[in-house]
Amino acid sequence: MKRSRFWSWLWIGLGILYFFIPLLATLNFSLRMKKDVISLMAYEKVLADPGFVKSFTFSAEMAFFTILASMILIVPTAYWVHLRLPQAKPIVEFITLLPFVIPAIVLVFGLIRIFSRPPFVLTASPALLVAGYVVLSFPYMYRAVDNGLRAMDVRSLTEAAQSLGAGWGTILLKVIFPNLKVALLSGTFLTFAIVIGELTLASLLAWPALGPYMALLGQNRAYEPAALAIMSFALTWGMIGLIQVFTRGTSGTALGGMK
Amino acid sequence: MAFLEINNVNKRFGQFVAVEDFNLKVERGEFVSFLGPSGCGKTTTLRMVAGFEMPTEGEILISGADVTHKPPNQRNVGMVFQSYALFPNMTVADNIGFGLKVARKGKDEIAKVVDEMLALIHMESFRQRYPYQMSGGQQQRVALARALAIHPQVLLLDEPLSALDAKIRVELRTEIRAIQQKLGITTIYVTHDQEEALSLSDRIVVMKDGHIEQVGSPFQIYNFPETPFVASFVGTLNVVDAVVRDPQSGALTVDGQEIQTAQPLSVSAGQTVRIAVRPEMLRMTANSGSGGTNELSGTVDTVTFLGSIVRVQVRLEKSKLFFDMFNNPHLVPPQVGEKLTVYFPREACLVV
Image 1 (tube, each protein chain N blue to C red):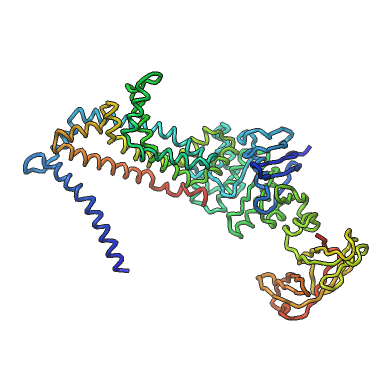
Image 2 (cartoon, helix red, strand yellow):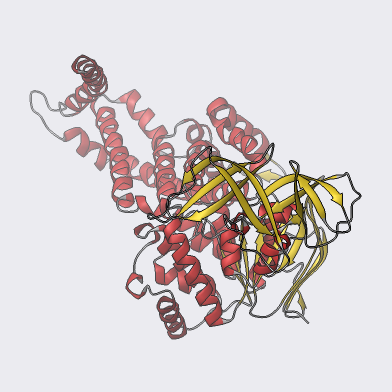
């Protein structure tokens, strides 16, 4: 018993060191912009750069529209698959996993090829970038929503609402969406994290997003990219923290229907 | 005209026939149970009444109106599910008021109906609770209140007690029947539990393999089963092989011992038939019915103590019969290996 515990802790300890040492080194480096002094100068420079604010705002906007579009697309799809087309589940799962198999570079060239000539000229519109991001978010958003739907008795809840007079719109908005809150939050934050740092699509479609900005900064500066890396970690962890805050006390609700 | 009519309804899923030639008329305020084993089509029929399934053929009328092709949200039919199906994101009050909110009723009216429903199920103090904060029995009562809040034309219950433990099940079924009688609501209740069906219903529809085997009151179903399936499915039964000796007088032999049925038999002498006797009709004393008594002698095979009753199994030659005795600590039950004669009235002898 004691022996096995020792080895467990050892491996956990090694894992933590493997993860945190580079992070601490990056943090340390990002604080060394001023010679022999620990300072936040790199962070100040990044935050003061209008390019950063502009690209971050743009990426945040794109993330917002991506999340909105993927929710509108994925929630009804996943719901319908659960309710009426369970036999289509493997096909839909396969499609949603495609972004893991097809590199973003292939996707973006495909998008450019199709949407840079009539009848659909969309390369100048951020809608194409959002559409690309929606595809990239498929695995995360679909999986999150699918897990959420598995945790509830979709068929009975739908039929209960129907027998009480509710139409499809009411069922989705009043019954399905609220009970997917936790799942949607997870999907939302993951999508946000992906979009905010995405490089390939934004760069090849020539949009001033945070990803290309970070790449450019990394080529020309030393301390600022380290500061940006720490900031993006903080952002991601902040998101995870928010998931925890929002989901606290709601864990029981997902299971309540079957208790 | 009956309040709910199910006329010549068939339901097929591809090649599989789920419900075949189903005809039933339910009067206003009647409590009808669909009873049968898993896969007999009882839930499918209920779901067709609710509108969740469309019949392949036939029609369904509620209060004279053809609802066969109406979507479920336009039928005004209340449904209670086995899994309760309360909306986990809503409180008890919101769950009960959901249907009224959908119907765009005023806030005051919703509050009034919710109060009435909470009083009906004796759960006034649970108004602000969420489903996960309640037991299964409490959740099912709320589900019942939610279904009743919209004042449905028909109340449908799909095995509502199956997920509950035995004690709660008995309590809740009494409560369901009391509420149904109080409101006079036409109710269809699906169950595979014969005790539930017998204790709750005005009429029972016994189903097997998608078709109706028998429709009748609990008394008729239990005492006068029309098919071998009904006889064996409803209640417990001793079934033994018997050889017909004289069809006219109803004389038969069971392992060489002569017994008699109350009615003449429609088979010829020498043929083997199966006869059934309810265990509660068997006695250890020759106290008979008006039509004469049968007796069969054998050896006590097993004696099983089941708390309030003691089940005794008697072996004849090849056949076995069992009967139940009330447990009485002051009386010694028969002992294994003891010779025993059991008596039963001729009219208790059913040919199945």
